[in-house]
Image: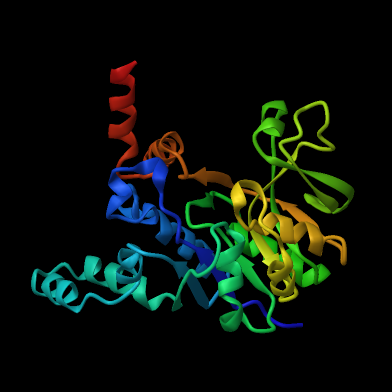
Length: 289
């Protein structure tokens, strides 16, 4: 069994929902309190045992690369100021993994950046997570939970989340075969936003996957779908016809930052969990009601 060492994180999107701030700043660098979103995503992967971070970037994404590099001038200045704890915190960002950067080439869509990483991944199974969402609060990091399932079954694993009726109109909902262990289901496929009447379950497929290298050949043959884009979900659907596929209902809180509302909610939620901020934040929120 090959140990999964690599994760692909697409970060090439334009971030149009956050314009004009994303005109010059990547949306992945939007702060959640004092850390950019992408750092939370990378830390989750590293805490799961991933050693190689493959970031598929685009134009105006240089800040993402700079963030995970050393800044010796800043580190030396912090040392002179006696701010050694902060210096170590800044240095650790570059130390925590091996980083590879690839420029996205090809049609728009979230399948293209995965295919762009083929030469780095090779013939190894690997993980994919998105650069604008992560999970907190679980007993294990989200990606570690998926890796544990993969190690047992050796087949593709997706991130799952239980939803209510309204969720069936918002997310792709899985068509389950059977629950093979607690919170792990073998699935037939995913139906995009079926609605409560047509939904086969109340398990939504979220971002975050463990995939075999065979996905690359499928992506090469995947035609452009919705919006004229190449979608990873379409390739995964084809993959699921050739081998078993599983979904793990993740233990943890889903943190979305892909819209203004979601980004604000995530900031508030994590501020209320922060020991240094929660008391003042609660007082301020109460003052607004």
